[in-house]
Amino acid sequence: MHPSVHAATYTDKPALIVAETGETVSYGELDRRSNRAAQVFRACGLSVGDTIAVFLDNVPEYYDLVWGAQRSGLFYVCIPSKLTAPEVDYIVRDSGAKLLIVGEALAGVAALVDLGACQGFAVGAVAGFADWCAAVAAMPDTPILDERAGVDMLYSSGTTGRPKGVRVALPEDPSITAPNVLVQLAQALYALGPDTIYLSPAPLYHAAPLRWSMTMMRLGGTVVMMQHFDPEAALAAIERYKVTASQWVPTHFVRMLKLDPTVRARHDLSSLKVAIHAAAPCPMPVKQAMIDWWGPVLFEYYAGSEGNGLTAIDSAQWLAHPGSVGRAVYGVLHVCDEAGEELGPDQEGLIYFSDGGVFEYHNDPDKTAEARHPKGWTTLGDIGRIDADGFLYLTDRKSFMIISGGVNIYPQEIENRLITHPRVADVAVIGGPDAEMGERVIAVVQPVDMAEAGEALAAELIAWCRAELSGVKTPRQIDFAAELPRHATGKLYKRLLRDSYWGESGGRIV
Image (tube, rainbow, N blue to C red):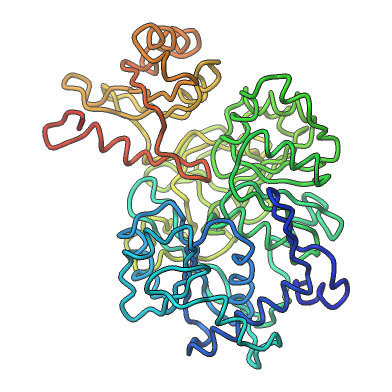
């Protein structure tokens, strides 16, 4: 399965629709455009196994580039559009990219990037970059002679340090039409196929939106791509395009649930049969509220860009095992203590997968080794437990743990409580310096109305926590921020928050 196959059978069927504008790219057009992209790559001297980097917002050309790279045997690196020039420099250099394609909307950052020996193209006008549209227009729209399947090479969001490039080998089967694990899971778990209309509301540089929307194109469905997420616009897109499947992160749910009930009620969502969510833990009250609103159409999975394993759970299973992220459907789960010994049911430890995908962190053998168990199993660094029925429950990331007075505290439970407060729009819980306890629990809160930030709201939020959490977990400090440093995929840059509290003096950096 591949867009080129569908282009031959139903040329005019929409492969892509831009939600905000209605702009449509047919399968025939996508095939021609990706062929031209592949021709440019070869004309620039790129061969099988080389790397390109893409630095774009959500625009239709994104798919031309990634499918062009996929059929050229290339590694394609998708760079987050919110990064600074030094961060983009680092990823381009670390990945070994020989060609960088940037978007006109990112011209300010792109102009500061040191290309070095890397060739630069721009979709639009960017100083110092060649015109991508002119380059592809000069190329034939026929396949290159040496087509071979390529693969993405994505970088972690860098929430706890510098981003890590996740590198897997080129597909063993060189055919560009060979099926992959996601195609099989999409069919088996969600019954997705050529009749699916799939809403993708998140940035394409992230693993889930990129891989799942490309999977939909492999299956011959139609992808409705949002250029920017807006909670009401997402509901309107479901109604307008009769969306049948979609993918979300918990912050999307939180923002939609905080819409006025009259706004939520005005949109017809009856076409939606599958609402997949992942990327970050979903607070139990938030998920329950979504099932109450949308019905039993929520499907959750736990996985990472590393592709080493995957768990899945549907709404009925979740209601029977609230808080779980499901049972393993790709790879085998293990939970181990600090010594690497496997633990029994309901014992909390580091989560590993075996018998799944194999990966390494590019140019970082130490981080690769840190993710390996002596038996060869691999971990994403998350803590959790497995119940007697094989359902996995996440506690938090090991690196986010707070140690206060010798007690291990995981922020996720505290964040899950605070986000349900009606006057909280977003929250991050971190450990800050404390002379007596070592670390203190600090909640950084983004209020719905910043004008309400102050001592009264802080006291109310502390009382809100105390009603359900033990004293050691209740924040000792509430600070307010107009906006948290959150990745567009929903992940918090906790490293940046934590660094603002830990300076050489041990105090907050103002």
